[in-house]
Structure formats: C-alpha cells, structure tokens
Length: 368
Image (tube, rainbow, N blue to C red; front, side, top):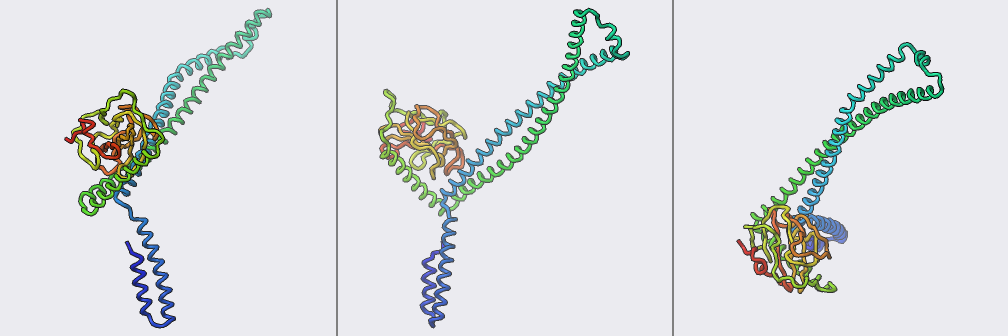
C-alpha cells in the first residue's frame, strides 16, 4: 500500500531545497496536488484490499445468494411444468369429448335436414288443432330446439376451452424454456463462485504468508466470538433455565456415525454430507443465528449456567434468535460456509467463557 506520509516527506524535502520564492511556491503547489492524488490512490487501494476471511465471507454470501436464486428458479420451473401438464391433460380430455359431440351434432343436423327438406309445411299441417295438444306439441319443439342449441353451445365451448388450454400450454412451455436457460446461467455463475472459493482455499494451502494471515484472522474471529458470548451474558435479563430433571450429558449434534472428526481451533470439525440435519445437543435458547466472519453461517445456543454450544459452517439456519429449542431439535443443516472446502460442521462448547473439549461432553466426538 502507498504510504502518503513517505510521499509527503520526500516531496517536502524537494520543496525545501528549491531556490527562489516563485519556484518554491510553484513546487509547493505541485506537492500539495500530488499529496492529494497520493492520498486518493491510497484510499482506493485500501478500499480494495480485503482480508482472506473477508474474501471468503463475500464468496460464501455470494454462493448462498446464488443457491437461493437457483432454488427459486427450480420452484418456478416445477410450477410452470405443472401448469403445462395440467393444460395438456385438459386438451386431451376436451379432445376425447369432441368425437361424441360431433357425432351428436351430425345426427341432429341430418334429422333436421330430413324433417325440413320439403319446407316447414309438413310441420304446420301435422300440428294438432286442439289447444292442449298444440301446447304439448309446442313444448316438444322447444325442447328439441333447446337440445340442439345445447349441442352447438357444448361444441363451441369445447373448442374454445381447447384453444385456451393450448395457448396456456404454449405459454408455459415458453416460460419453462426461459427459466431453464436462466437456471443454466445461474448454475454457471454458482459453479464459478464455488470454484473461486476452492481456488482461494488452495492458494492458502500453498502460500505461507496467506496461511499465516488466515490463522491470525481465525484467532481474531475466535476472540470476537468470545466477546459476542460475553456480551450476550452481560446483556440478558435472565439466564436460560434448563428443563427440570434433564441429564447433564449432551447428545451428538449429528445423528450419524462420522469417521472424520478433527480438532479445529477451539472445537472440532465434523465431515458430513451437505444438508445433514444439525441438532441441538441440549435444550437451550438461540442467542445468535446468522453470518459470522470466520465461521460462515452460525448458531449459538445458551444452555444455562453459562454453558454454550456453537454450530458453524452450516448451510441453512432453521431457527431465529430468542427462540427456545429442545434437545435433539433440528436447528440447521450441514454446509460449506466458512473456511472449509467440503461439507462440515464446526462444533464448539464454551463453559463460563472457556472453550472445552467436545469429546468430554459427547463421547462420539472423540477424535478419530
């Protein structure tokens, strides 16, 4: 990074050795202009420089946002596909009805043709003269006419409904194609961002200076975590009270047998498949749920008597701050947020502010 003070000193020395009042004034003006330019460049460089954990945090947040977009597009695609299939079933049903309607319409048309091919005179001559018979005759004709109108209306409605269903199917097919194309673009962006994170992690493994920087930043984030818990301890009105009669032992945060439990920072990292449910090891209250630099998405539970459990690197957070949870309740899902390349859960226990070995509370978390 450019040090503005070095530039100031060097340029000031140039001014001091210049001869002539006029020349000095001009040099001084030039120095001031260059100082302002240098300070602007320094600020620009400073704003662009990001810590290793900061870069990782930005990538994790970008990945999470892109995953939400992809999930939303997948839901839209399912909805469009369902509407398209519904419209296609309606078309098939209406087309099945069409031959019967056409046959009935054709039969009626032939009957009317035979009846009226000599004109309407036979109908008039055959009409009864008695008013009661004439009334029945009239009603019969009205029923026949109404039936014929009904056939025509049914045929028209069938075709209109079929046309509307075909238009709906076409529109949903276009929407589905557009959403598929957008989904492919978003998936490409998601893959690229994930690759960036993998490259960053690889560069940390191969560059000593970056590795040292990351370790320093991880220590700093652990200290911030301690401060967060202490702040919560000082701010809360009343400590969490465990349910009466509950055993002091804790359950495993993952209801699976994991052969990959490794010491990490102040706790352990447990490898597990992405999306594996993360469960509360004991009844408690959620005191933090969200992003935390160095830990990705994280949940902290207060179990009372200044005992806390920490769940980091998770993908989905399923609880909110302030909510009480029971032992074994699902609070999150395993993910890859934080400084990890594969799906993992970071788990930590703090007793009166001091990190403790999780295996002392949960035997299945003994290092393997």
